[in-house]
Image 1 (cartoon, rainbow over the protein chains, first blue to last red):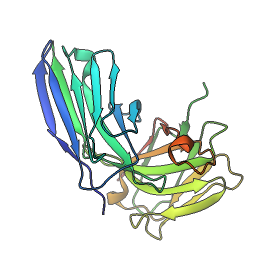
Image 2: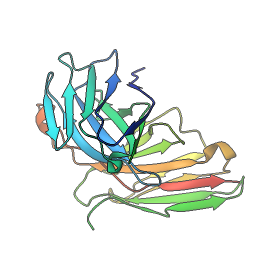
Image 3: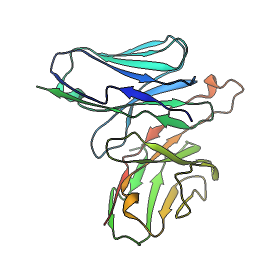
Image 4: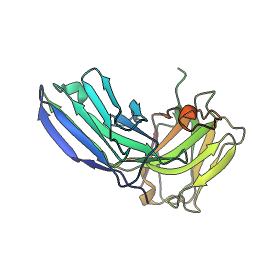
Length: 110
Length: 121
């Protein structure tokens, strides 16, 4: 069974701080996505990484796919209250079916 | 709005009743997924369709659950004889898979609908 573990599960930080969220697995994936989800809504895609070692930036968010395509990280610089939400990683195991991580709930305090 | 839509957004029902949810995917997307998400957890895969064919079902999908996509466009998810444990957010996602020998070149992202929150009393 392919599992994606995210850490930390919960994170509460002050506005302006930096943070990193991790997504780890023992399996190799052909691609990995990061989503943010707000209460009562569906997940919204932030980024997709497909190449081992790939780094993508989206404003203050930096995403990295591990060289072996088994893990990924999301780094947020100078967090803002608007970054608050549930961050989910999801990976495709080659059968066009997605497996989601356990999620990281982020709260950024003003 | 050309995104994925789901109806209803909220459903409250009594234990033992049947419920049906609808998902309208992005029009050119040939693949449609159903997920279930409980509070504080990531979505769990339930089933997916390639056009009108249901290609895979999770073991989470008991006999009380049935999904259809009769014309390869919208999809319905029905839960019969609901139980309190069925209370969750039911999410639909769609995607376009382009036929290609190169898996990476046929890759496209999936897009989620807003979900249907089911509460079974």
